Image 1 (cartoon, one colour):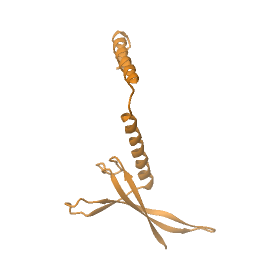
Image 2 (image 1 turned 60 degrees about the horizontal axis):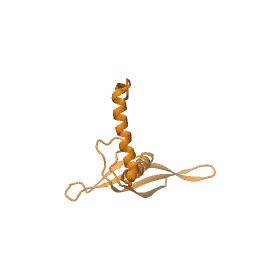
Image 3 (image 1 turned 120 degrees about the horizontal axis):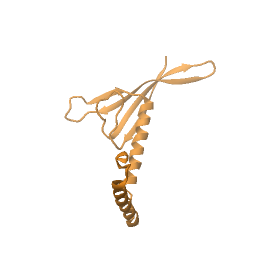
Image 4 (image 1 turned 90 degrees about the horizontal axis):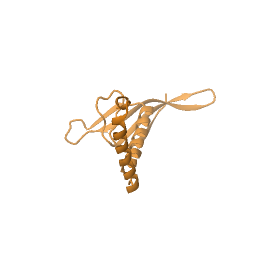
Length: 126
């Protein structure tokens, strides 16, 4: 039985959570080691993932220098995509809004407050 190890680096800009964890993991760079086992078919040779470990470095003041947790690569990839989406949403929120757009948003808010106060559907909208 032949086993190989593949190391990947994952960078998170925001805290993230994985199944089975009670707390979020902090933003940062994480090393993931995936152990793969050789699987031979009739006409091909391939490696199948057996185990993936996410390494969490301990703080200098902690007793544990390094902690490794079992992870699913699919879940880790999904967490990375969600991290990228969160970054894009923050960029949109930080985008400059022109004075005209700001004025229009203010007018919409004022109009909705006045019309909902008189509307029989005001309770439904809230």
